[in-house]
Image 1 (cartoon, rainbow over the protein chains, first blue to last red):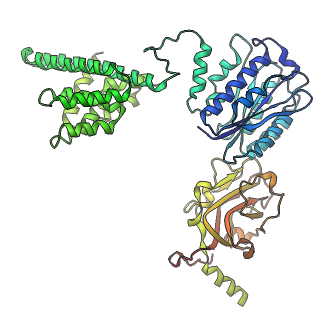
Image 2 (cartoon, chains in turn purple, cyan):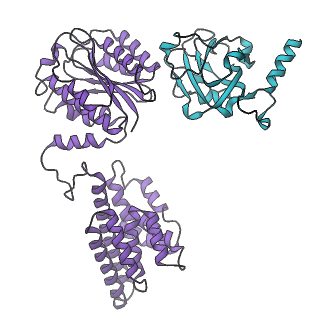
Image 3 (tube, rainbow over the protein chains, first blue to last red):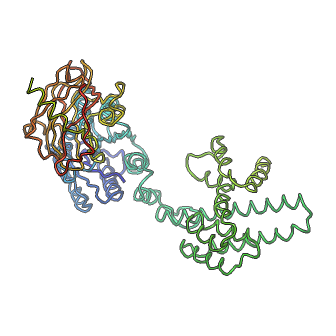
Length: 398
Length: 177
């Protein structure tokens, strides 16, 4: 969500007629440019994008930085190929255009599509890069098209002289099956310094991938990430709860007499099955919470208090404060201290936490650090620790 | 002697303007990311001789400091080493968003050429009349003492007073270095 003004430098030289990228280098470039414009304007409505061409008769600014996506896309029409690309002039004029941007609070960025051979020397490019860095302009380079000896080195040298704290990037796209846009979508050029990808880019990726996406719940996470996340979280939780309940019941049955434990076991199973229904029904989060609140208010907590706690824990994933408030009102006066511990129960439920963590990218639940963290989370109440001890050996059994 | 005495008398009414700096708008162009402006401006960091503001691509630095209220700027102290410390310092009052390309577009409000005494901490007295109504200050460090690639600044301190009210409690006696 960085506020940014971007100038895109397009290569419209003769080299772009080549068809090694489908349908032609120029068309692939144009598609990529459209996607970038969309992504930038979507990630922050105040972002501006401008376009200039580097070849032809000379460097020509087609659009100064503007947030009007229509204007940007329309100026891409009717572009003619010809001449040779002038990279140095293109970058310098882009820098000038950015200098005169209307909103001085925007960060400056230049995206260069370098598809033809570069006639400048490495030294000259480094000087340009230094000047960009001095004026805190970031530079993204897309190296595609013509492969020439020394071109990657020159571009890498340019990147090195501009780069300040990894704000600038370079992407080398070899010719092949994949469209230029597809390759770019996963790169920082699109995702913008590791913000995690804009929704637009992700949607475009889904569209480009084409066909039916095999997402778990029939909901495309790219179109509606919050809904998909809510569904996934509740399913995970449900699964974890059932596992935990089954485990607990099995252990208790093993330790004590079977007759006494049949009762709470079936109770907890009933509780979990009712919570399943409640969760899977209306996936609107507010509705789910509302139903739980109603159910709780009708359910006088004389019976299974653990069922009430389990239901409360459903809500905690979405809104911990709401859950606590409901809990407090449910168990008025007594057991105020138990409320936070119920919340920590969810966190302390190791299998649940590890299943959630495993669905997060870059987190390995078997990592000793993660395991320590999980173990340290529920450090408060005694029954909590006992439960951990129960779960630890059961986990080891797995 | 009397001129010197009166000069120090004026100095005593001035406060360190550190408290009036609007930190959210402070910017520095061409600074090295590991040696940033805070090392020279912020309390504690600027006293530390090991922590310097360093330039990055070349020896020039452009520092923009907005204030939370209108102030009068009396003097400025720039400390650095004898070789890499700044030499020519140009000050622009109330110019926003300057870049290296337009520093020469208009004349500075004042220019200071720092001597080794200044680099040890002696403040440079500025043309007070030019800095009566300062909302923001731009400091352009043009070159350094030895002409090296990197300029290192240990401390930048601004002395002056506020325009609206003079907070009597805030008046601190400035010790002679």
